Length: 308
Image (cartoon, rainbow, N blue to C red; front, side, top):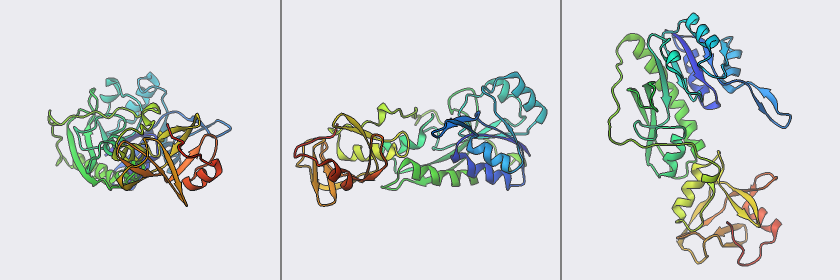
């Protein structure tokens, strides 16, 4: 089949590479426009654009995918199907109607669970033991189209959303390629999603990532892991933001008040609404990440000081 691939961030690269290596022809990619990055704020191409250019594939960068120039070029290419991985823009019906076999999205959840922008983060936040990825035919609704196939993935006890997404990006790439093969052969037919079991996964904001130390330790642990690497869990210390890396749960009930800090040798423990947790790495405002013990020694913590 002739394909036009749509995607933007690094998580889409395994799928794009798998399709380039497949029997199908990737005629072009659609990605978000170049964006400023780094200290110099120079315009930088998206990871998908960079890989496509290295492979000699045409790159389309519409500001909005309803632009007449983009739609005209897409019609000229005349793709059979358009696979999508984390493109980042809403596709209008005028674009959805171009490929004869539609647009097929790789979504990182077992639909209809966790429809939306942040399915992996929400799976970690909710304490799901199993999640996965789904390929589905895009409709105008939010991740509501019929499903072609799924792959499952166990959520490990220490997984961050970054860890989990990295594994899903690789298994999902294989699923997307197999889906393209099945659509091409006519052996694969999408099945409607069930009407029960629907859950939503809206984008996690910076405000959402603020730690509530009165919450149980397990919830604090899930919040930090779910927000790693983005947007990054945080708390306040002496009036300034302190970013938190993954924490460890301590045995026994806490003798510390919620947010209260205790330093012993190289460990930094913090009280929660249930058990104590042990901090891993932290990042003070304007500084690099460091071990919590180094941070505590540098700040000469006073007894009874608290986070939050």
